[in-house]
Image 1: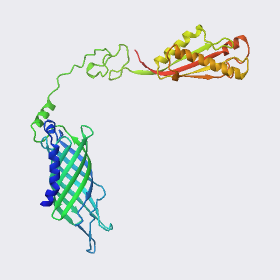
Image 2 (image 1 turned 90 degrees about the vertical axis):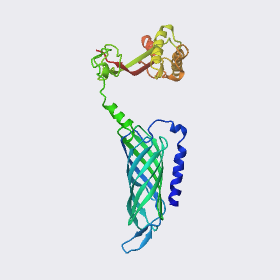
Image 3 (image 1 turned 45 degrees about the vertical axis):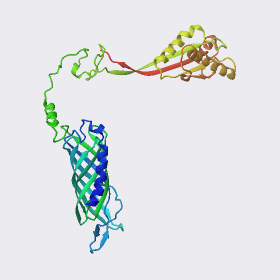
Image 4 (image 1 turned 120 degrees about the vertical axis):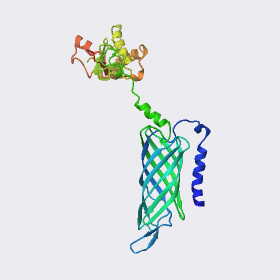
Amino acid sequence: MKKFVGIALPAVIAGLLAVSPQAAADDGYYAGTEDISVGLRLHLTKYSNKRFHVDGMGNLTPFSGSLQSPQPGLEIQVPLTKRFAVRSYYDYVDVETDNAQNKGYGRMMGSDVLFFANHNWYFGLGINQTKVQEHRDRMVRGTLGYRHEISDRLFLKAEYAAQTKSDFNDQSFILGMAYTFGNSGPLFDNTRDRRRAEQVVEEPTEDRTTDTDGDGVPDYRDECPNTPRGHVVDSRGCTVYTTQQVSEELRVGFAFDSARVTSDYQGDIRRLADFMKEHPDTQVVLHGHTDLIGTAEYNQRLSERRAAAVRDILVNEHGIARSRVQTRGHGMSQPVVNEISLPANARNRRTEARLSVEIRVPQTR
């Protein structure tokens, strides 16, 4: 009896400390609003080494008193009131002897009553039957646990359990996951019947004809109200979109041996800037070129200056971030017309750019 008190008393004290005035003022269901919960668990157990393994020759070897490897189990829990629940569990047992040459198999099964101090902390008291090879012991078991809500239906649980009988004292550390079914509430709570009654109340007749936005999908199942007139919609009443490619091109011409942008091209540069503002994730590369007159080295520098001149207008006059504009000088290496003549030279002296993006466009009737 003293051993049991020594095991159960700390759990009881910890549970009582968790019952703060703030927790007592909460009207929620501590034990759960479900009808039943089913869980999977893994337990690490330190069994009493006063149990013995008996081999075929009748030799006795003490079972190990150290912590054993994780073993699986199952549990079922039913809430009784706001704070109390009853639980039954079954755990597989696999224990090594001190010399690790033999193993004892069995099971731990039992039932306990759980008291929920608040939504998370609980402790329990119950009866357990533990079988390790030939040892069958009915034991008193105390539990201190914590549960963490992952969703409305799923909980993670962590427990410490101690059980005792005469000379046998076992300790377990348990990790588990439980899933709840139903939502009628505790078995012995008067709100359970009320919840069931609310569930069978007939819903008022629903208007299934009104179509406010005229898209062909009635309001009761229209997930996208106020769809613009003329849009093609899906079964949910939402606009159907298609993907289109839109682009903007720029060509700026230059006088002979010049990197000055004339007013003739200001409108073209403005259109490119507006396109970049409309699509703020875009970046542009400006490609500068020259005609075929002069040395390659001189023309390379000239092409770089021509690309930079267009960049400066985009940045300084139209507010495009410099990080979004890159320049490339190609010198005389990429002529449009591969000859030296007045028309060819005029076409080759240029800065070019092309931007292309995909946009979503609503389908229309």
